[in-house]
Amino acid sequence: MDLAYIPSPSESVWHLGPIPIRAYALCLIAGIVVACWIAEARLRSRGAPKWAVLDLAVWAVPFGIVGARLYHVFTSPDAYFGPDGDPWKALAVWEGGLGIPGAILLGAVGMWLGCRQLGLPFAMVADACIPGIPVAQAVGRLGNWFNQELYGKPLDAWWAVSIDLEHRVAGYLEYATFHPTFLYEALWNLGVAAVLLLADRRWKFGAGRAVALYAALYWTGRFWIEGLRIDPAEGWAGLRLNQWVSIVVVVLAVVYLLAVRGKRQVFVLDGGERVAVAWDSEEAEAAGYVDGALPKGDEPGDIESAADEADAEPDAEPDRPEDDVIADEPIAEEPPADAGKPRDDS
Image (cartoon, rainbow, N blue to C red; front, top):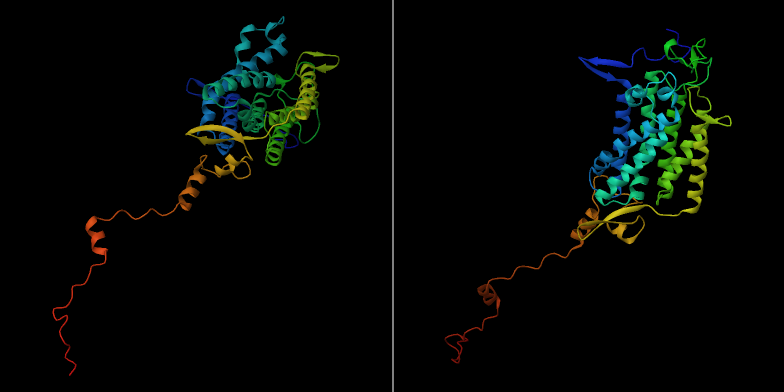
């Protein structure tokens, strides 16, 4: 095997009896699991109910997959509705082809519906969950490697990816190695996630500002990565459609970051109900938050309750029986029997 380039997997489907196990689907599922794990940890640190992320995922994941597929079909219609296209292939999600803009847009709609069901502030939840999204994207991009798709222009370098003849784009059949744009995007996404985590720790984003920062960072990288790709896509004025989307989204995200202000919110217990307050409020401090987050494993108010119990005065002694009280009272001494008689001093 030539190690001067990145080899592509020889198989992307395995069979468990009659059931096909597709690497693309496994990568998507793994990405969803990782995103949920990150979101759960961040939501819990802000006082959200345990496993609320699973209730949100029930709405967000199906909406996101449908949106991703619709966007892909819309931006690459010839493969499905062109002269040699197959409309039924539009339903074959397992063969690859999911558009990130559609996934984010409809996925956000699903999360909004989930937040309404749970009574959670949507912007607060979105800011908490957003760092998990680029990590999920990075994991999901490995599915493109297994499918030998979404690579870039021909490249002769040690980090180029080898693509089998049957997976090469028309017009590039004579080339064997290409830019691994799916790998570029995966690494870029991991960098975006790291920046989001560090920036949010520093500035305590609220009001959807972490989402705006994600949009600005991700689509900046997507612009130059998209310029390397050679798979068929709609375009205009020398730019692919996703590059135009990148320009619009980055501009809107930067404007949002400059125009909108908002602090991170956390949940405190008020009469047994969770109420969202600013992370640096007196209520948050009293509930046990430290630098805008609960210590691991704590619920809102746990530390406050523990402190109250420690500072409480010791209980007064219980009332004693009446006879004990009487026994403690001073009793007049009876005079001795020889009182008033002369004392014998001899």
